[in-house]
Image (cartoon, rainbow, N blue to C red; front, side, top):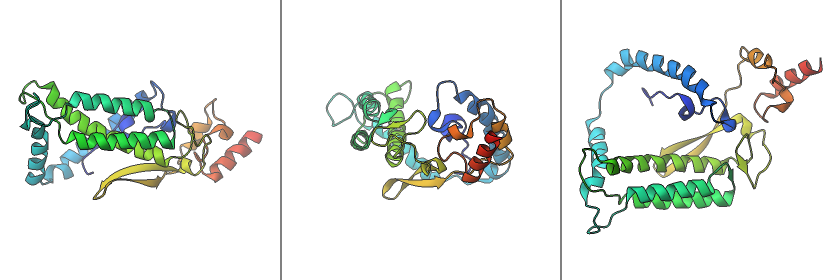
Length: 238
C-alpha cells in the first residue's frame, strides 16, 4: 500500500519463528529509523499529490459510528465488545499458541469466523467523547482480522520451526524455510499465498559467519540456499 510503512514485529521481523522477548529492539531501532526516513521522503514527493477518496472516508466513518447506533440495555439485539474480546482471547490462547495442531487451528478459525459474525452486532452506550467501549469496538474488529491471518497462515505451515510447534508435524521442512506466507483479503474473504524469501545477500553473509555462534550445520532448514550451505560446510572442514 503506497504510503504505509512498517517497522518492528508488525513488518515480519528479523527473527522469524524464533522471536523471543527483547529481540524486537533491533527491529524497532534500525527499521524504525529507515521507515521514518522513507515516510518523510514519500510525504515530500508522491504523498503530497495523492487524491483523497471522499467515498472511502465516508464509508469508514459510517463503520466507526455503527456501534453507537443502538443502546446496550437489552432493548435491541447487541453484542458486548468486551465479551467478544474475552472470547477471542480464549480461542487464540487455547488453540493457536506456540504449540498447535491442525485440529486446534481449525477450531480457532471456526471460533474467529463466528466472532466476526457477532461483531457486526456490537453496540455500546454513550457517545464519541471519552468512550472506552466504543474504542474497544474498533480494536476487536482489527484483532479479528489479525487473528484470522495468524491462524490461516499457521494452518498452511505444516512443520515445526523455531519456537513454534506443530504437534502433527514435529520436524522442520526445508521447503518451508524458503517461503513466507502472506495473507490478503479478496472478494471471497481472506486468502493465503506463499511468497519466496529473498536469499541472504552475499555481502551480508561474511557478517553472519564472523559470529562465534555461527555454524552452518545448525541453521534452520531452508535458511540459506544450497550453494551457501555447501560453502559454509567446506569452510568448517578447513
